Image 1 (cartoon, rainbow, N blue to C red):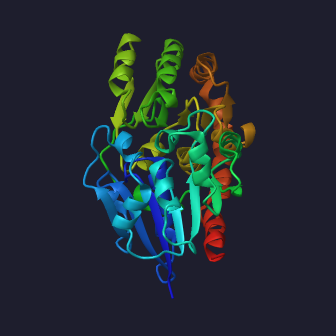
Image 2: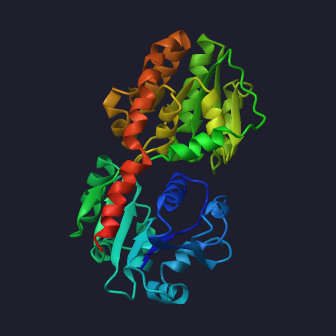
Image 3: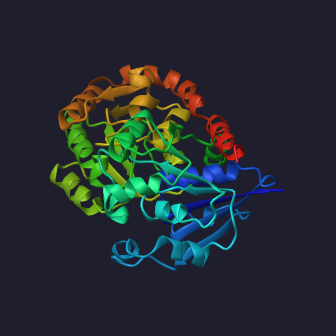
Length: 369
């Protein structure tokens, strides 16, 4: 008999958490597992990427302004009972906040309940708005059988903030290399001048990602070497502000905002160096993707990337500040070839984060039921 698995999150937007979920869903054996994904809201760029074997249910047809402030006062068991008709063997909250409350409200006392934590709670406790108080948040986590965090930094922060009694373990995120290989076979019409030093970053355009610092640092490097270029993939609330900044710094002609891209890998393949400028990053799947494609990776010391790069053994780490980014962009402008030594080790490091490694850990949890 198939085991029934439930995943709960807010919506299937373009993001690292959602991409990871798709990779997990595509790695589960459909002969062994029957999977349902419940989202608070329908839609999102990745909704149509859900495997056809997955049952998808949702609460609202679209997200309304201010809806989260209302949802936090709704009894989560009402939402659970409205949408969830079956009983599941494993119930997994894949996002903080309301999804955690919904799974904790399961009417099935026999199910194994897992909360997957993707954020650094010491930096920002995103789920607290839904839980309202830290005591209620702790009570919610205490109803779970296991907590999964995505890095040592994430685990330490979670324990420090929640002080939960539930066992907490780290399972690193992973990449599905077959998916990347398939995507690379697509041939979109992109134009990147390979004679230039092409820097690339992929991030939601939010202040947490430090893209403003990266643009300022890039402007300093461009003063030294006008052959560097910066490609930014992603969208978000800071986009207009960042475009204005590039214009003010007179680099708008060499900083390219590419927006959302369902296939970022073809751009990564053409780039020279991947730059990660985040202020805080619990993990950072995009670093693994860049490593897999053999790119030298540069990152601020911001949490998960330090672990991915093994504290500088597989990539260059710079101080988490404007000055740190300025220094590395100036070094790249002066002599980017000193970073190319990392490209030889990038793919080796990426193999440590293969989907088979992560799924082995995940399936062992599921099979404990």
